Amino acid sequence: MLKIFYRIPVILGALVVSIGMISAPASATTCGAVDYFGTQGGMFLGTPEGCGVGNDKGAQGYGTLNGWTLGESVGENPEGDGKIDLTVTGQDWSITNTGGFKHLALAIKQAKSYAFFVLDLNKALSGTWGTEGPASTINGFSHISAWYKGDGTPPPPPPPSNVPLPAAAWMLLAALGSLVVFRKKSA
Image (cartoon, rainbow, N blue to C red; front, top):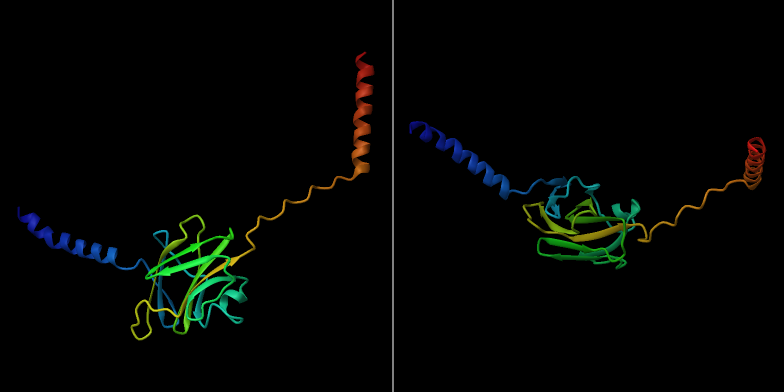
């Protein structure tokens, strides 16, 4: 009976640590002075492709300079070509890939920095987002953007390989000649 009482503090300590781990965000990425949190299909987004001070959009923005096309953004100065749909409601985001693009990304900009996450198309195109900082600002953003690469159409099939006709003709004649010789020997 005494052994159980000695184990209670250990069990309670493990329980407190477990609850703290469950309630805390899985991980955060710090870009500039802001911590960025994000999930996709219930899983942590991982390390962003782009992270830094500046902007993800505009002529000098990270997305444009790295071959991405802005589909849609919400927040300050919404823009984009409308080929994908982005919805942000509270801490939830979702993208409708109306163009069937093979590469999608989500960018979150807060204050003077951004995090640019490439999405996994094998997972649901929805999740959560969050920010913290600067000055203890929690879950604020200047804009959230959805990006894509490619035009959404499958690539054309490769052209058939070219076999030189003269070589094919000589091989055909050689094969026919072999058949004639073989037939005469067996007769």
